[in-house]
Every structure is written in C-alpha cells, then in structure tokens.
Amino acid sequence: MLDDTRALQRQLTANDRSKLDEYLTGVRAIEQRIQRTESFGPLPNPGADAPSGIPTDFGEHMDIMYESARDGVPDGLDAHRHAPPRERRQ
Image 1 (cartoon, helix red, strand yellow):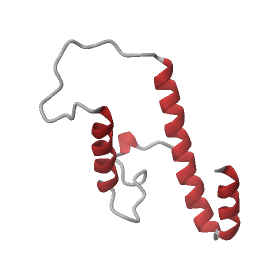
Image 2: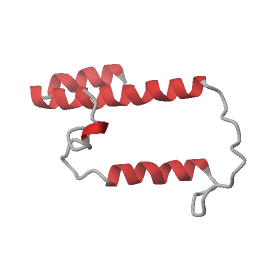
Image 3: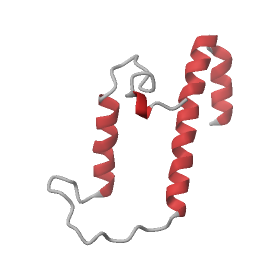
C-alpha cells in the first residue's frame, strides 16, 4: 500500500496531497488506537444484557456504527473542523 500511496501522491496537487496526508494520518491514528485496545486483552463480562436493538453479531454492529459515522458527516466537510470544541484535537 505504501508504494501505491507514493505513486498516487506524485500525481496529486499540493492541496490534494495535504488532504490525502490528513486522511492517512487519521487512519494511522485509528490503527494505533485499535492496537492499544487489543493490548488490554478481553474485557470482563459486565453481567448486563445488551440494550434491545443491538445486533448480536459484532460485525453487523460495527457495520452499522461505521455507516452511522460516515453518514453523519456531509460530503466535502472535514469532521475535525466541525466537531464540538471539546472534541477537537490539535
């Protein structure tokens, strides 16, 4: 993927390279969060039933969550700039 990204960057304008870099930085941050989360090991069972409407299949649940997050940001908008101030990261 790194080679493909480098080839793509050579074809982009400076503005588009900046957007691609921002996107890839965000992807890397998510990867690092996942790695940190996985290092904690399995979470203990809280002993409570899941709320009604939550899919029992974790993959399906995550698909719904990702689709909700994606659909919540209008096309062309940078979610970082439009997040409430307490959620912005510098």
